[in-house]
Length: 134
Length: 134
Image (cartoon, rainbow over all chains, first blue to last red; front, side, top):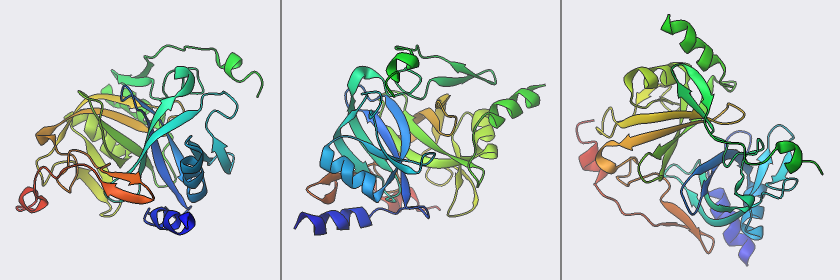
């Protein structure tokens, strides 16, 4: 049965005290680091099943299908785990080319320059448009 | 004074209850995600000062200069922060081309294949050699 095997690979992950691990989403084509979010067992199992990233929203305390409002889903090409099994790396195709809720390509748009965090990536779409139906 | 500005950019980060944030190290040249570790205020301040990554080791409960034993230091080209200011991204030059304590190029060497975590990256150097002086 698939269920047994699935449980084992999930249990090999070292979930933290809250039952979560950080998950890095990386653009499968150009290598950009898009975002970091958190995953529970259920969110990672659903990610595998659906082939699209499902995270755990710590602020909302619920599963969060990436793109559920924005349409900016992440098609998962690979799921990787690190040496000490406490961080997941997803290689994804980012639908719409926008991973960040601010309308930027990725979330790491602030760069430290002379002691200030400078925004160095353009807003590709107004968040008001992205989330207008939300 | 530099100290004042430094305090402000550090305080703009949303440190967790333990005073830490996850920090992703990415190869500045080829975009590989090398590892995820954790940083405290002091480790990030020292990273900026030294131009080389200094993390906080949660297992050892102390500052951990990456490469202090292995020599595999990470020269920091850029420090980035994400939209909600709770994750740091370092773009680094990885000395020796090995970021992982297992002797691999990076830590995310296990790939999920048919319900199993398969090691899919070669060991470039025997960890016994890397850490023999440690």
